[in-house]
Image (cartoon, rainbow, N blue to C red; front, side):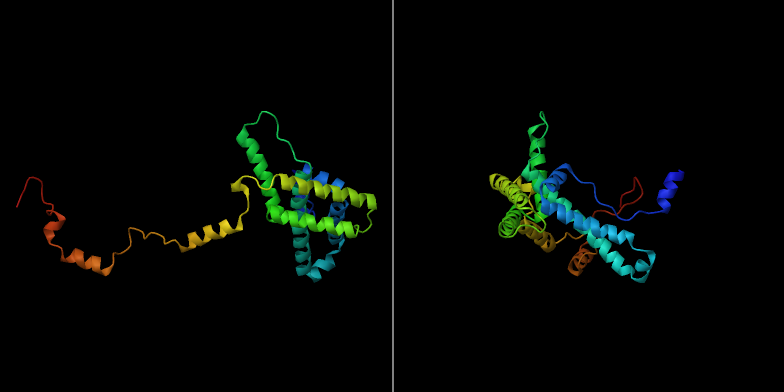
Length: 224
């Protein structure tokens, strides 16, 4: 209890997310990914090291930087996880039913959509990075490291070309989503049965003869 009390009393600065195995493998093989992660970690460490007068003087800046670094770290994790899964596809355990194996493939495709938007967009990003590295190696990176990273990106691109799409329900189809939203917005909701009837219906009910609604109830055993 005392240890937990101390932890609660001294909140630590925002820390990195737990890294998945595919993301970790990608970062170990990609110098560009390592540089991107190190830049976030360095800025986060500098932000945590600032003394109290900095955030008291400008709390909005502290909030903006912390929010940006958290979003950037999450973005990098999604991207590196997706690239790692397609560079070296993770095999499903033997003995799983076919529907679970299909679900695993669909979830990998979903992660690609979370990171890039769609398989087509992912291929565009890969093509751009390959072309950039072929023209200009990354800063502080040796030529052999650049060549290895290009080969890694090309391996991901080949995997995407061999598996252009997963199950239809796992793909982020912006057109289908827009159509479904439009249909839901334009559909007329049914009126509840407890609403007051319109004027013409009230008038019809008032003008109807009394026998139309059946005999009036009376004491048991008596008839008019």
